[in-house]
Length: 201
Figure 1: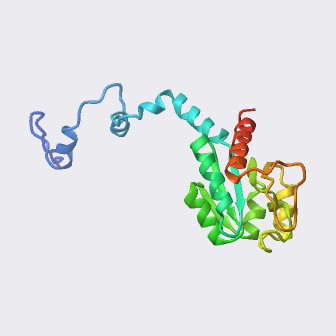
Figure 2: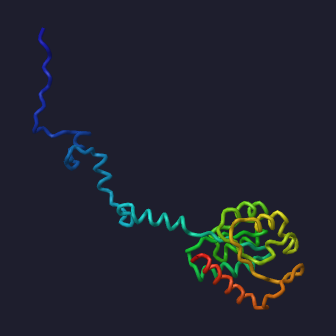
Figure 3: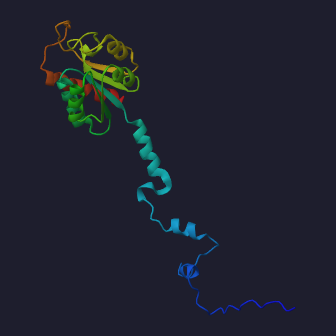
């Protein structure tokens, strides 16, 4: 019984179908796979050449300090602080606006804070994570700001490891002796200057 002959394929015969598509791909050298050659042809971002610049950018991002600006009621004092910080430091720092109420937080975000949060738990949680805390002196006084600043808030802020730069503003419950009476904009200028010194040290 004779075996059936296999059909002969002529080498000069043009391939069809799926193999026709493969034939159109450029020839590969060194035995590299077609998948690898595709990714080799994708243009790389020049800013990430060698990974050096990308790593440096990641280090700068990690080194960026976070400042918490805390305020209550209408958020006017905190907003002024954030505006001046942005003018002096730009995007070199991350500013977290923490308000005792939603209206204050909204004002802080509008002034230029990167993020914002409101209420007792938000303040207690976030003051543990920042590098510097700023605001009026009343943020470490329980029941200040007409009762908006709770004892737990005051305790969390005052016991946080972050450096605290506070404005010595007079309130009905407290008067700071030995501090010159200057307008709020002048005090904020001194505050921002001191924060710059601390960040550079």
